[in-house]
Image 1 (cartoon, rainbow over the protein chains, first blue to last red):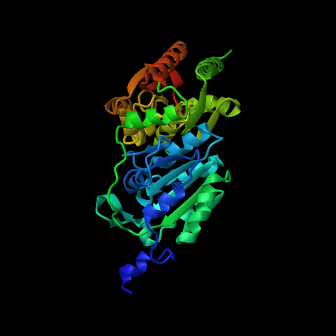
Image 2: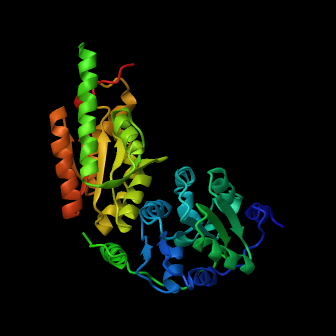
Image 3: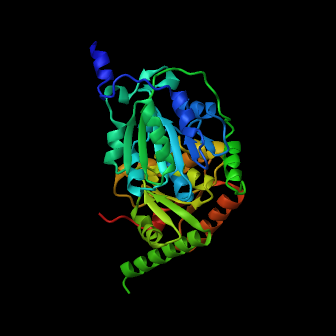
Length: 206
Length: 178
């Protein structure tokens, strides 16, 4: 194996096998009242491909902010579950949030990183996780109640159950192939997505 | 009472008034990066059962959290020092694009009686930087202005969907003694 390849798989999880679209579709199937915040880029397209939903809030920018939007939401909605769905690049920009979430510890919060080890939206440059940076270990060290690596299909169902349990804060890094699936664009009018989300929860828009 | 004692009393009193404003507006989340000028409010927020105060590793986290809180039906106020304003710039596009109501209370450094030159650049840029990103800026220089300015800011933010930064000036907070 070439040196570059060795470095690539240094995180010990081997070659990525999971298809991001299939994983997200099964995680969001029968979602109940699950509230979902996505990071910008591929993870937003994956959530949209699984079916647009008024309980989805999609970021189109504000890179590094998805997890913290989810945290503010989880505090506000303690009786519901909140899942943040983002990518490795987006989360790497908000690593401090792991500490903030670990310290704050809301049980109804999960952070799911679709880790393709690349910055997919900008030309597939290898990301830090391609060099072995261990997000699962970071979340564990930050005090998340659970932090797991998902590499095979049989783990996905278990993860889906964890999202619905109230045992967080939880973290999962889902190792997905670095495919470029067709873009399925979520609505990008921020005011509309915000207002739709609030209306769904029974709040006035202002 | 000596001068220092009076200062301490004045300081505690405007901080209590500020906190009462947050209570009246039913603020439920208070994310913060600490500063001495906010210390009393942070302490009271932690002690109050109607609020959740939580520390951030960087101020931009609080901008994002404010959006999440509002999505879930809660009001929040972000506390930071002027040096943190620069950390928020790109995250403020979230406020701007989605027109989230947003209030931050910023304790100023680097503008008056400053010993540490490293505080000066961001102290000078804090107000203009907020304005560049679409957050309107209101300054408070005197203790008796704190409650009226914060009350009005809360009203404007949550009743007319605005983004506001209230800057608590260094003349109000006093010099940091070294």
